[in-house]
Length: 263
Image 1: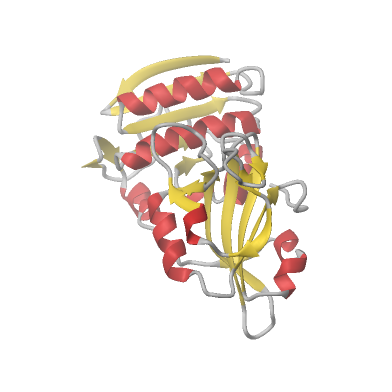
Image 2 (image 1 turned 45 degrees about the horizontal axis):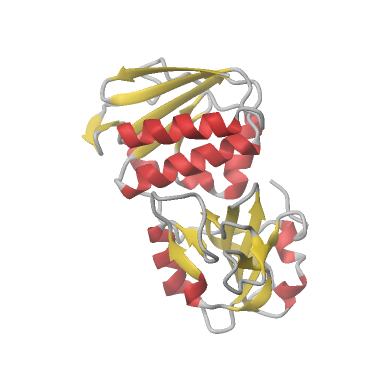
């Protein structure tokens, strides 16, 4: 893996070449987080990246955490179909500005008239993406509807853990008409420093199925990519969660594999 860094009209561009896999995942995460601390507008050109693993996704999440806290913007360009699928299935595409066709070296890749925002420039297309309402819903994945807990409640809050302390967090609501579920919120998040466990002061997030407990969730910050046993999600998603969770909501926390899920 090789990374070239340069400025482009107020945007810090990272042009990445080569595979981003488990062998260089930590180095990639370190580089991305440093770049996101230096600039409020970071664009990653992935046009010359033939393979991007979930270890690399962790770096994107950590970088997004930093930018989110200062109202910044993360753009991805040249995204291959495999990575695009992972990003969409985790709901992370709602947090990023993505152009899967052109590289970041093209100043017109996002088209349209640009305006100043968050320390950089953003096109009208980008602005519309950033203004998405989180209340928009879509059909829940089949594996969510197949969970036994889906027959017990009208709302499911899923925390599907993968890659050390990273998690996919989603809220699902049952339709009154046909009993199917819609996903009304999805986001990336982080679990306890030591992974999953019983949650008894061991810095592990409790695994299992139980009624919603607000103290189990909090907003993440820029200090570290893990928690002391809670589930950390972006502040705006936490606000949405707190205003949309009903009394009969069940939390289901486990690994993505154990839940039968996939990206």
